[in-house]
Length: 166
Image 1: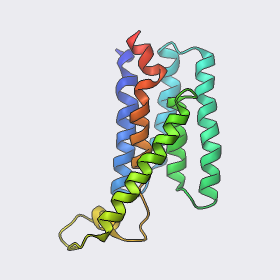
Image 2: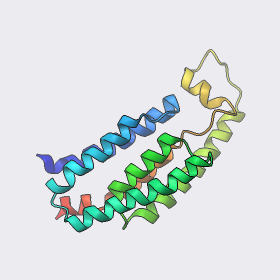
Image 3: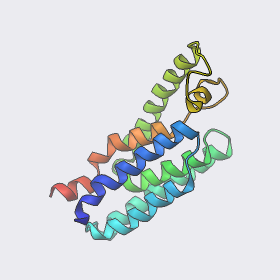
């Protein structure tokens, strides 16, 4: 039964992360911690070789170090940095470039969509609080949406799927 877990757990947690960021503009630490913990639980159970696991860990650490720099200079939120790294842990080195390119592309689309949304007039009493917050010009961008979208886009190309399909 556990062999189906990678097909459901990672996409579910990433979708939850994106939705949480959309609604609250925050990505709680427990989401990234859950992704890391479940990776280390499932990787050996799914039969990923130690060398493959180590390459996934290297991808996660590389992205964490780069994302930390972005966080330090104010280009990224802390939750975004941790989620990006946790996603890289699951994606691994083989899909890392595609994952990061996807984050950039989805992030650009998200930024354009938010700019268009923020130009629209609205009645503050007629929309939920999260939609009002997104409409504010200085509210930032819930980048967890772009991170989750890219992760879900690249995930089918990872060893998790090839192990399942084998």
